[in-house]
Length: 269
Image (cartoon, rainbow, N blue to C red; front, side, top):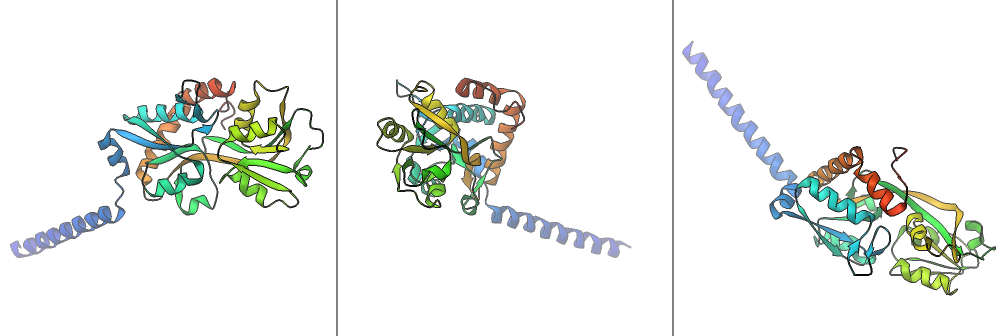
């Protein structure tokens, strides 16, 4: 009987060792210490393009402000860490993420199938897209078909550039590093229309409604999320939980009202 018990004890010990090795291998193979890394550093480093009002931009005192900035700060507070924002030009922001210049991009990133090949995202926290903006006295552009033969402005490396590149008949797509320059050229009639996220364009023309208007017809609608490196799932999941909590407690609604003048989450968007 003792012999039988001994055999069972030996088998149990072997199984425990095998199980322990298996867990160690799984942990080692996953290699995801992204949340632990941020917690240990006591801060989360976030890449932003600071030329995209009202989402992320510089105010008159050169402070970094905006809808995304307020949300990122609220998320960091939930995670118990500080925030360090790293302003980066949009045409290099995804390369900088992969080069580990920062932990994530919270800067109005449209979630596309192409981007999902190299990054992972939170669920959409707002919806954007591509709207057409023209001078207030323009009567020739009513929809996307009217863009044919025209010079159109957009920000470089955005989905607006991608959408416009697939449209036939446009005379020229003029690309800008920031939306402010694009709208300035529109106002000065160097271009005939600007394609941009509706929130960005609406904010820009808020005090210029007598000069610039938005066409009712949208080119498309796009989900916007926070982008992470593919291996950083733990950090993404923690960020998502914080966003969910902020939506539930009304913080996202308050931030929305502050920057847009209305609650984009009122219909569970």
